[in-house]
Length: 634
Image 1 (cartoon, one colour):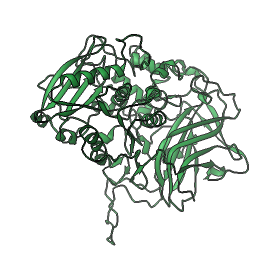
Image 2: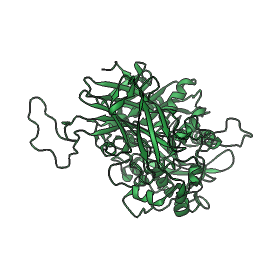
Image 3: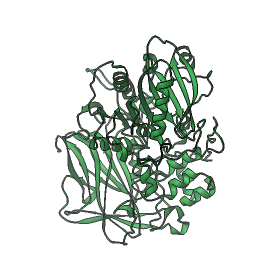
Image 4: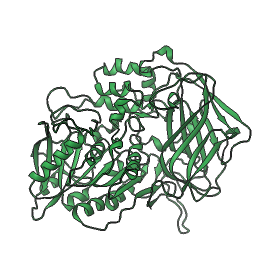
């Protein structure tokens, strides 16, 4: 799901790539048709089909199903783009787009991640799997000139519909690509991360995304929300407790927001919507795509691929991970995220050398069957790697320990101790070092120097690395903590600290004996001593023994928190340092923890209190991270 107001335009277009196409070119090459496709329960889903005017050969069908509108509506109105990328339009496909049940011009009622029903009570019972089956069946039987083969793709929420369509798939569906798929809203996707509610992103999304009132309509979206300030930190702090959002801004009228906020544990509501649990014995070939810096659905692609690999995997089960924000591989060059420059057009490479060949081979028989188990981009060295297993077999778990004096090392201190800070909900740690509204899609590479200077952030750092340190796979967190409250969050950040003399961003480098430029560009970002966030995640402490049943802390008593952060593929270069930061708020990225064991959506101002947080280090049980190290460590 797109949950940033700045991304509203992309959201409404279903994240289809905006490239060098235009509506005139599409109209010259394709004829548009609009249909109301019947489902098995009698409801009809609005579907637009674009067929090549050249009818000299049959064409496969590329299908996208979306809750974000398939506009423009009307057989004489054409979009400026078709398909996953421009190459598809030029190659020749039949493109089909569908408003899913209950959205825009389709009949029915929309439901958040409509649960899959493995045991249906009647032949007319529906879910997104049956809607996909019925759609494909109708298309291959009723669209002239189709080859009988269908491919599906979709980014974000449309990616969820691809995943659902892969289950009990129609025989004509031979290739599917869930990209940044919403897979489990509670377990690490858009809604909750380790029990902490992703406040800024969800507030922005549900101020835009409301339940449709009345019959099918092409215009059921809300107007952009006016925050009245460019400072999101100030806006949300002034808003007060989470309960105040509903009173002041939703008025209890957005059912989707209410469902997100009220279901604070991993209960039956979330379990029913965990689509990944049904991805067993998938028949179509699958290419799952994710961004290493996807602020919204970083975990979804990883969970999708891992579960399929363990449960009768599809004939082709390829994972692609690139240095991308949410969906950016589909429409940007992919050469940068925030202040990071990857020195190559990774988005273009994906679209032309990975995505297009995948569908061309499976739907048209063109090209070669050369699909590794994983295509993964390694940040730090900025190189693509093919892997026959993900995480790679050669990545061995190695601990890195929090030590006394703010040190970070490969061995634990013999003497036990602790570090302490005070967490104050009235003065939470911001997630950015500058003013911004909502959630920035590129925060996952941001400079963390502003946080290292705060007294409520603990910082641990290695010495200068003498050799490159390659890591791949999940980042394990094992903390021994205590709090004077009865609940607290613990945010853990893994950081790459650049040398002080690191070149400025975008400065041309010296090559072949040539002199570097005399002046640094005026708009260059100073990267010396930059603290790049490599991976960071919150953990709501009351869920330390499981997400189904929260438990209060006993004030002052040490207890253990263990969890995994989403996979990385990164090299800490020679001359850099590794840093770990720990804090108890990350605002307004996540909602405020009152630091009192209460139902947070109903907490009042008087429930929020300061707490003294301790992180214990040293000895056999001291706090540490686990890194998947390739090739040993120095």
